[in-house]
Image (spheres, rainbow, N blue to C red):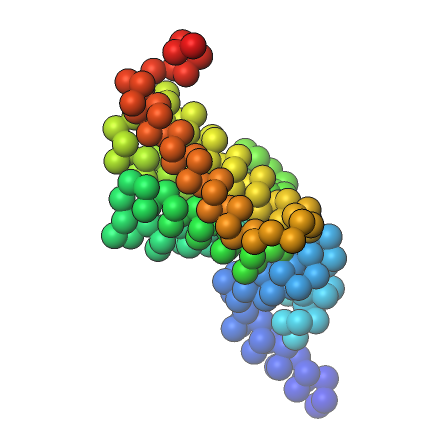
Length: 209
């Protein structure tokens, strides 16, 4: 009778369990402990289910990490999109940049996971990655850059945001100076660079020397 009750409870938990709930709990775990400490056993314990129940939603730990990477990029896109609404030009660039840093500070483990995917050829992963790129492209449309220059700018901004946030997460900014001020100076310098390109007729900077 006791075993039957236990089975019924487990079945009820499994019925309520879906991928969104799993990813929400996984996000909490990696934000707290880091991606390297993630295990199916720990996740199952936090969810109150047996580990085999998780295999209904993904294939092993690598499958979970792939789903988590996609989830992380989707959340980053949400942060950036919400920040960009109602803004254009310089204000939009600053807003999406600040939202990127805010996301990393809020979800350090999830951000780490979003950059440690298992299968780079996963179509869903590629789709969400492209959504972030296209969002930045749309923000930059206000400057009327040609297509090639816009891509260069997207790459540059991505390098700034990922580099800055990664160094900060590693505790690499040790000097007693305001980190937010440093970031503001960096983004303003990037924006000045865009205006410089525009003033030069949106030409290849290498050909302007």
